[in-house]
Length: 415
Image (cartoon, rainbow, N blue to C red; front, side):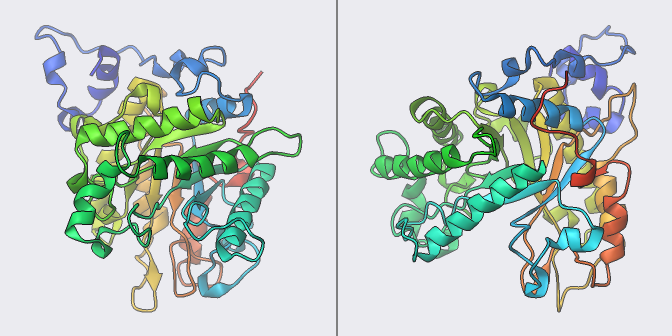
C-alpha cells in the first residue's frame, strides 16, 4: 500500500507480516518515525472528497465525518432490532438499556420485510406493519441521536421464498445473482426492489423535515456461500457490477442522498489483497466492514488474536483510504444449551477492539460494533437478569466503549 500506510504498518511486525506490503518498500528505505497523517487529511471542508455521494445531505456528511473521528477514541455499541427483539420476550426498553441504563449507540434494521413480495402497503398486511414498525424505530433512534444501519436479507428472485442457498436448487443458485445484473432476466425485478428501498429511505425524516442518514450494506457476507450472492455464485466482477449498479441507481436515478454505503464481508479475509478482491472501488464505499462470529465462537485466545489481527488489517485499509471501519456484525449467542463464556465482552471482545495507541493514532480504529438481535430463546446481549449481565455492563463502561450517553452529536459538523 502507500508510503503513508507503511508509517503505521512498521510499528507492528504482526501487521507488517499480515498485510505483506514489503514489495512497496525500497531496499534502502529508513524506518519513518513521524506520525501518520491520515487523520489530518479529513477536514470539515473536504469530507465529501472521501464519500460516495458528493451531493449527500449535510446530516449524512456530518455522520461520515463524525464516525471517522469517533473511531480514534471510541467504538459505538449497537444491536440489530434493539427496540423490538428481547430475550424471553421481555418488552419495554432495549435489553442493552435494561442492563446499563442507557440506549445503544447504533440501531440495526433490515430491508427484508420492507421489500418482501407479500408487502402490499395495506394497513392490515403483516409485512407492511413491520415496515411501519421499522421506520418508526429508525426515526426514534435518530431523534435520540443514535446511528442507523440497514442490512438486506433479500430473498432470491425466482420464488422469493428464501435468501439461503440451502433452500435453493442447483440451477437457482447458479443463475440467481447473474439474473439481477443489467441485461439479466430479473434485472427489472431488482430495480423494483430498489425503488421500494428508495421510497422508504426518502420517507425517513426528522422533526425538522430533514432526511435521516442511514448506513446501507447490500450483499453482506459475500465471501461465504450461504447467501445466493455468495462467492460460489458470483464472480468478483459480477459482484462489483451489482454493488456499483445498486449505488448508482439509488444515488443517481432515484436521487437518494442520505445513505452511506458499507462493504461488509464475513471474516474469511486476513490480508488487504483478499479483503479488496471484490471491492467495488472507493467511489462506491463509505464504510469498510467485517462480520465476525466464528473467531469469537468459544475459540479462546487464538480466536481473539485472529479477530484482532483482522480488525487491524481493516483499520489500516480504512485509514489509507480515508474510509470508516466497523465490526458490522458479531456476537456469541447464549441459549438454554449454550452457556456464556467467562468475560467474553469485557475481556475477549474488548481486546479484539482495542490496542495501545502509537503516536496518538490507534492501530485499531473501529467506529462501531453491532451485535445481532436477541430472541425469546437466546441472546447476544444480556439484559440485566442473566448471569453475564455484569460482564456486558463492565464492557460498556470501559474507556473505548460508547453507548448513547457518551456518543457525540453525530449529525452536526463541529464548528
